Length: 284
Ligand code: 9MG
Image (tube, rainbow, N blue to C red):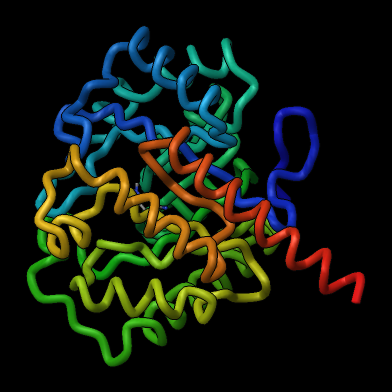
């Protein structure tokens, strides 16, 4: 089970956890590598925590469509000084966004308390690394690889196929020795999916729930917004918040977002209204 720094449970009924994004990449699609220096990263994390972030997701490999792979050394150079600085200064859950076992080991020993793997521990030795470090893991669905994943994604039925993939990964992880309660599943919006396939997955989000595991959704500033509203990345915050609320409504327990404060306010507002309805139902 995921816990906050004070030992309280991170995921509680009626409260969505907010994961703020910190890209330590020079070619990241939505913040252009703004957060490479440790000082700037620390300032940005402080703002995200102030805005309500429960988790900070730090990544050193861009996974945007068309992005090129990076070596473990390059990834480590980008993320390690930032993880070290953040774990020294803040009591926040640090998530390492990586598929590489070397990065998993180093990040967890420097204070990361969660792994976010867009390749669902399929990369060589990643599963064994996750078993050894024994922290919660987010398993995400991706069809293909970032370089070519948007070329022509094909599914029988996107929701059934994504659920089938995640189900196989959950079973493999549990057989390898990861506790079921340490797993989180994620449909991987934008990772080898057309706009319509993303829309279907969002409408059917609850259908990917497996063994009652938490669902993480990442829709923030993604190209499905640009494709629908013809907006540049920098203009996608309001639509991102609308999608975040839909994801919560449809079952998401963790939201991965850029605009932490604004998303958090919107989510907490909806939760407050829903709470009134639940309390009324309990009384009657
Ligand atoms: C790293 N990254 C980019 N988008 C993501 C998403 O939708 N989910 C997760 N888990 N990670 C993501």
